Image 1: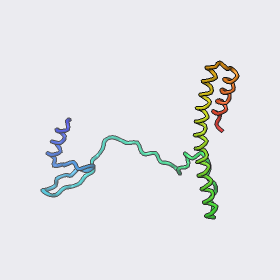
Image 2: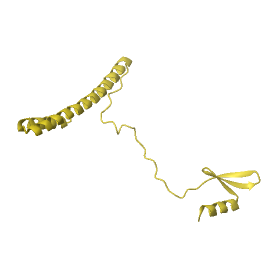
Image 3: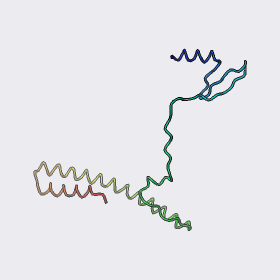
Image 4: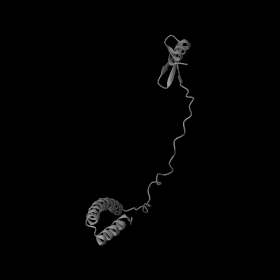
Length: 127
C-alpha cells in the first residue's frame, strides 16, 4: 500500500496524522486524539546499576572534614594531570628513540641498535 493510498484511507475515515498522535474527526471542529500504534518492537534501553563499572580504581572512604576532602580532590586532580604529562613525555621519548634507531640502522651499528631496542621495549612496559 503506497503512502497516498494510506492517506486517502485516513482521510476517508476522518483521521489526520499529527506527530505521534492521530486526530479522529468526531464532528466538525471536534477531534479525538489517539496515539499512533507502532508495530515494530524496540529493545529496552540498558540500565546502569550505579555508574561505577567504568571506574577502575576504588574511591576512598567518605571524609567528613571539608579541608581533608578538598585536599583529596586536589591530590586526585594532580595525579591525573601527572599521568597525562607522563603520557606526552612517553610519546616524545618514543619519537626520539625512533630517530636513534633509524640512525643506528643507517650506520649499521649493532651495539647501538640493541641498546635502542631494549630502551623501546622498556618504554612499552606499562607501569
